[in-house]
Amino acid sequence: MRFSTKLFITVLLFFSFYEMMASTNDKEIKLLFHTLDSLIDCQESLIAEKKAQIKAIHDGVKGMKLSSEQELTLNHRLYDEYMAFNFDSAHYYIKKNIEILQSLDDANLKASSLIRMAHILAVSGLFEKANAMLDEISLSQLNTEKKVEYYNQKAELFLYQSEMAQHSPYFKEYIDSAQYYRQLILQIASKESFEYITNLASYTCERGNVDQAIRIFEEYLPSIPQGDRRYSIITSTLAYFYSRKQQSDMQEKYLLLSAISDLKGTILENNSFRELSSILMERGDYSKAYSYLSQASDDAQLYGSRLRSVQAAHLAPLITKAYDTERSQSQHRTNILLLIISLIALLLMGSIIYTLSLMRKRRLANEKIKRMNDELSQHNDEIRMMNAQMKEANRIKDEYIGRFLELCSNLIHRGEERLKKMNRLARERKLEELYAELKSNTSINGGIRVFHQNFDTAFLNIYPDFVNEVNRLMTEGSGFDVGEDANKLTTELRVLALIRLGIQDNQKIADILRSSITTIYTYRSKLKSRARNKDTFEDDIRRIATY
Image (cartoon, rainbow, N blue to C red):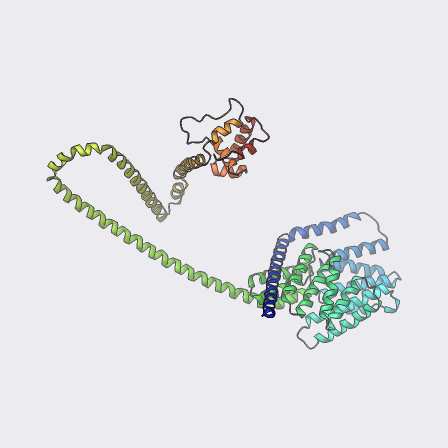
C-alpha cells in the first residue's frame, strides 16, 4: 500500500512537471513569434540602416587612389557586407578581386577570392559554375587556413545540392560527399574555429549521433551574438537536428531564433522562413504559413537567390491552395452568419409591425372607452358634486403625480419621436440631417448633470466631512464655501475628489469631468498654490478619512 502511494505521487509529480514545462515552452514560442512579427514590421528600416552602413564604407574611400592591395581589401569587405544581402553586388566585388589577382602571384589570395565566388554562386543555385571556380584552385599551393576554407566550401556546395535533390536517389550521394569534406576539415582545422565546430556537429549528426550534435551546438551557441550570420546558421542547423529527432517544438523554437537573427542582421539569403511556413502549414495555420512563405520569397527576390526562390516556389502552391481553402470556408461561415442575421432582422421587423398593430387596437379601444365614459358622465353629476371636497384635498398629490406622469410621458414621447425621425431620415437617406440629429448633445448634457449629481451625493455619503477637511489644508481665506447646497461639489472639489479616489492622470480626470486637460492642469496648479503645504497637498488630500 505504501509503495502504491509513493508510485502515485511520483507519477503525479512527473505529469505536473511535464505540464508546467509544456506551458513554459508555449509561452516562449509565442514570445518568439511576437518578436519575429515585430521585426518583420521593421524590416524596411533595418534594410535602410544596412544600406547606410555600406554607403559609409564607399564614402570613406571616395576620391582616394587605392593600391591593388587596398582595393583587394576594400572589395573583400564590401563582399562580406553584400554576401548575404545582395547577390549582384557581392558577385560584382568578388569578380573585381579575381580580375585584379590575375596580375598577382599569390595562390592563397586567389584561392580566397575564388572560394568566395564559389560560395555566392552556390547560394544562387549555380552549382556547376561554383564547382568550376573551386576546380581552378591548386590545393598543393594553399596554406592550412585556405585548405579549410576550400574544404568547407566543397562541403557547403554538396549540402546545397542535397537540398535540391531531396526525395531523389542522389540525395544520399551528395550528403556522403559533404561528409567526406567535413572529415578533411576535422583533420586540419583549429578545434576552436567556427568551421571545426559546425562541421563536427553536422558530421556527428549524419553519423547517427544526433544528441551529441545538438550538445555541441547548444554549448557553442551562447558565444555567438544574435544577428550574426553564424548564429543564424547554427540555429537553423539545430532546427534540422531536432527535426531528425521529431521534436517539432524545439525545431520550431530554433527556426524562430534563426529567422529573428536573419532579420536583425539583414540576412536576406535565409532558409528559416520557408521552413517555418512548412511547419505552420502542417499545423493548419495557413494564414501565417502564407505570410512567412511570402516573406521568404520576397527576401529571395531582394537578394537574387535562385536556389531560395526555387525552394519557395515548390512550397507555394501547397500553402496557397490550403490558404485559399481556409478563406473559402471562412467566407462560407460568414455568409451563413449573414443569412442568420437577416432572418433575425426580418423577425424583429415582424415583431415591430405586430407591436404597432396592438398599439393601434389599444388606441381604438381607448377611444371607445372614452365615448362610453362621456355617456356615463351625464349620470355622474351628483357623484362629482359629492366628490368635490375629496378632489380638493387630493389636489396637491394629483399635481405631483400629474407632473411625474407628464415627465415620463414626455420622455417616452420624445424618445419615440426622435426614433421615428431618425428612422424616417435613414429611410429617406437624409444623411446630413440624420448626422445632425445624432450629433445633438442635449441628452448627453442631461446625462452629465445626472452623473455629477449622483457622483457628488455618493462621494459625500462616503466622505461627509470632505469639504471641511480640504479647507483645513488651504491657506486662510482661500477655502471653499459649503453654501446652502451641501450635497453639491464644485468642479475644483470634484478634481480633488477624484484625486482622493486614486485617479492621478490629468487626461483621465479630464475625461471623467468632460473637461480639457489644460483646464484640469490649471485647476490642480491653482489648488496647490492655495495650499498650506504645496509639496504634500495632493498626498494630504489622499489621506482624508471617510469619517
